[in-house]
Image 1 (cartoon, helix red, strand yellow):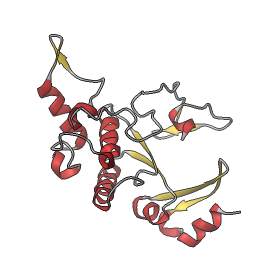
Image 2 (tube, helix red, strand yellow):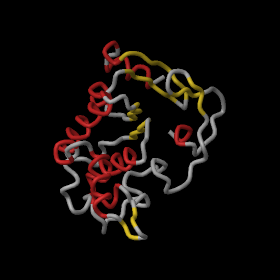
Image 3 (cartoon, rainbow, N blue to C red):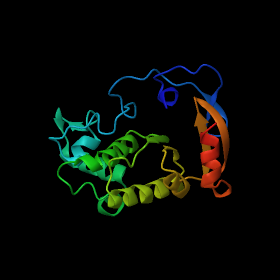
Image 4 (cartoon, one colour):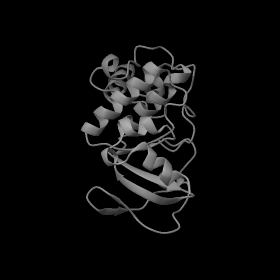
Length: 191
């Protein structure tokens, strides 16, 4: 994940994006959108959900924040219907469990093409986990690449198309999700 975010330079190998085009990552900056390790690390708890989604990216008009544009951009980042897709925008403040969902909306607002989720359900309620999985399904249908990192194998099986098992920083196995049983995944995880 540190290599994907640009925090660490790769030791070897290459990464490809969009039909085999080789890519180099720019240097990661603390607080940069999509560059944080901890969910909610750049959220301001005193701001509304929509303000947090566009924090630092607020559209302005004549030197003043354009509230109507903020609302429109936050809704667009959350999907065509905020209550249907995230059920976030109506909330005045992002409570702890929904911080991760707000971070995802932030990433979408800046136009990310690859979304990396590291143990995203660790602080979510079962209802918010369901919302997250619904959102992942919608984003996959829209062509967004999602890297889902988790030790919860049932979750991985539910949301993924392909699985790669890493052990000690190396790939030890991969395949189509439908063809990999949980027993096989566990066997790959432990030497």
